[in-house]
Amino acid sequence: MTRAYEKVLFRPAHGSIATFVASLMRSTPSIRPLLLALLLALPLGMSLQAQKSIKMENLPNFDLRRFHFGFLLSFNNSDLVVVQDPASPWRDSLLVLDHLRQPGFNLGIISSLNMTDNLSLRFLPSLSFQERQLQYTFKEDDGTKKIFTKPVESTYLEFPLLLKFRSDRINNFAVYVIGGGKFGIDMASRKDVNQALDDEIVIKLEKYDYAAEVGGGFDFFLQYFKFGIELKTSIGIPNVLINDDTRFSRPLESLRTRCFHFTLTFEG
Image (cartoon, rainbow, N blue to C red; front, side):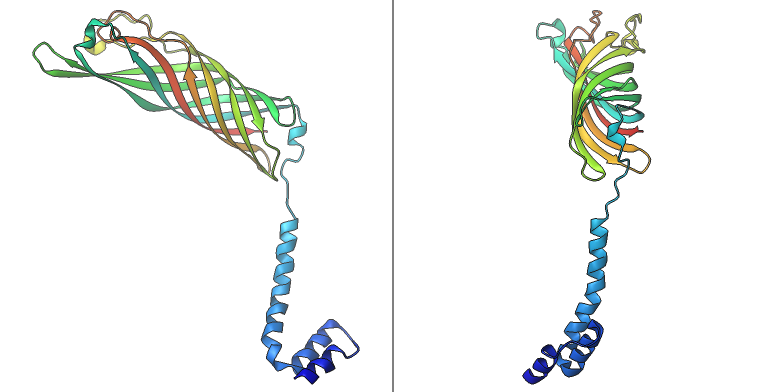
């Protein structure tokens, strides 16, 4: 077998590589499976290498434009940060006060100004539909418990102004963090509602609110537009409670808004 290798390997090459491989297989039958496996794997390896080297970048000029516009659809989960008044005379009769989150949604417009390659200023006027619930459990004079569930509904016209810091593009993908503040006007504020019966009493909130916002997300550069997925939290700063001296507002010292957003963005 050694002589066969020497005859083939050290013979002067005549003809093509295929002729050489064929003669090698005839002279050394024991390595035919190995040679066949190598011949089959060679085209596959070349194909995978070609696919790896070809990466199509969508929207290659997207970041060259200074302004971008689009729209957003957001699903929110809103809540109230409740602080009870320790000096309230109603503390003895109020056994439990729960604040319950409720789902809602936002619709908005995106306007973005590219300040640098990685930093942009975003103005996102939106309409936000939010609902929260406060559940009171009172101890009545006869010793029984009575539960009241008070929905706190708001329809905010919001004006967020945010800074977005984004990583460099990795082909058609980027990651970012975002932060800033927003001003909101509650279009469904019931601050002027006349309170009568316990079952009809509503929790009144101030018409205006402002909040800090922080979050992060991912950008995907598709063929015709940029698609984003974002998670963000919004924390209200002022006390929005209107204390109108009812049995539901007296035990409270302050109410502040809080909201979590899962947002889908579409920009062109």
